[in-house]
Amino acid sequence: MSEKPFRLAVRAVILNERGQCLLLRRSHVCKGFVGTWEWPGGKADAGEAFDVAVRREVVEETGLQIELTGVAGAFHVEMPQQHLAVLCMEARLSGGELRLSEEHDQSAWAPLPELLQWDLTGGFRQFAEAYVQRTAGRA
Image 1 (tube, one colour):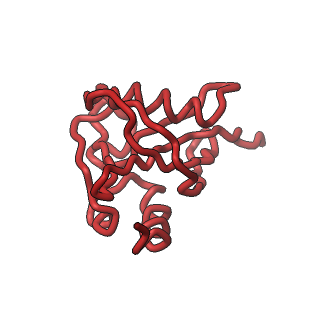
Image 2: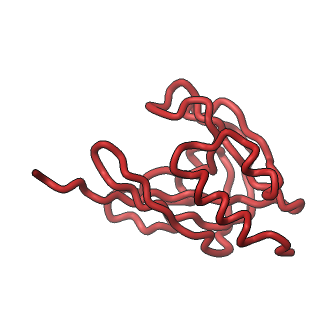
Image 3: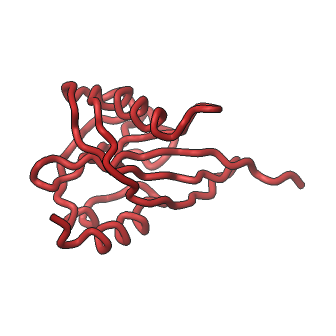
């Protein structure tokens, strides 16, 4: 029996000046979790640095440029064919205009304390709950 490979995935917690984070709803084009919400991101390419990967994914999925401001945390998702180590980075907007790729059909700015009221993508909810608790009251 062979062990599943590990892949790096990245997500961006893009916060606006009101402390809201950008959420994207997965479209019918996605293989799973259609209609659920997530932070922008995806899998890093082989040999790609995580900071380059998260910026690339955000541009591909939203048309927005970001400046990374910190590490939000990480979580693990076991998939049928692989393990995903998901690194979440905090970011702020630095340019661009919001335009969604075919992977997503809707966007919204959600206040962090209300994040858990959204139908979040599987594997993401537990991390989001811990992140909201950890950042509560942060200016």
